[in-house]
Length: 116
Image (tube, rainbow, N blue to C red; front, side, top):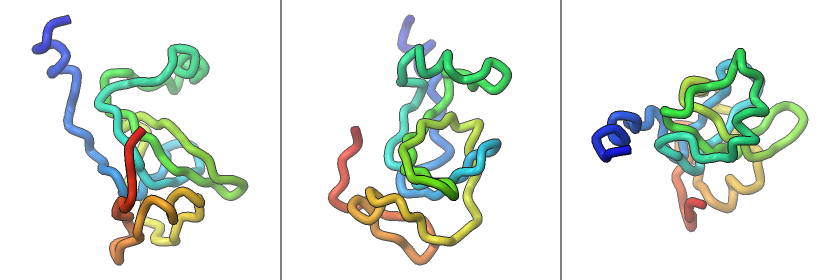
């Protein structure tokens, strides 16, 4: 693949590190801690997503410190499945308190932080 084709595949990420987002379909929200310009996970993970909701690989994918009503975890989500989160309730994932400082806007600023 030539560089022109690759650069055509990579688009600017809509969301940024520290931004709070929610999933478009599933009931969870989280803070972004890393961004992949295009899909960068295992083929096994990708194939485990039901084909009817499987996202395209040629878009940004986001690593989230995520939570739902029952638990906290890390999630890997395509840009097409994320929305800006309007809930200003602080997130409870324990890694957030170690790696981010909450801003007045409800988003988070990275501190003492390294991407994977």
